[in-house]
Image 1 (cartoon, rainbow, N blue to C red):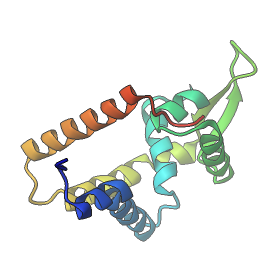
Image 2: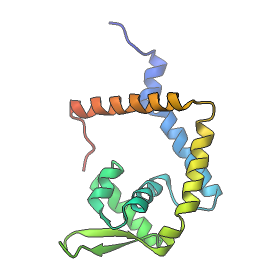
Image 3: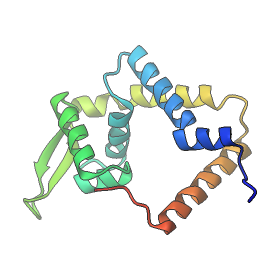
Length: 153
């Protein structure tokens, strides 16, 4: 049987060296800018900046997190004063997640750090290469989902 990857390539694919390094670099840049958000918290905030007042489930789905993971992130964001939970008027069992003034005010600063980080890591990579990479990742994720492997809730 012929493999499409060398053993070293498989190890890097399975261990996620690139996402790990990217996350470390982004976390470092956020910290250097004096922003007290983790990469995981930033991903939740990014959804809220586009869809303030959404449900916890929408946030979990948008960030590919399970129920317990998103709850912990929201607890910490609430403790830091970035978000607040409000009971839905339509269904009081459902909480809607809203940005506080502090959560809204930090958006421009965070987006600037994220954009600087992305610019630095994509230096010398063409727009066409980025598009191809995105297409490849989408195909890999689609294949995984078709096999039936899903994030645990």
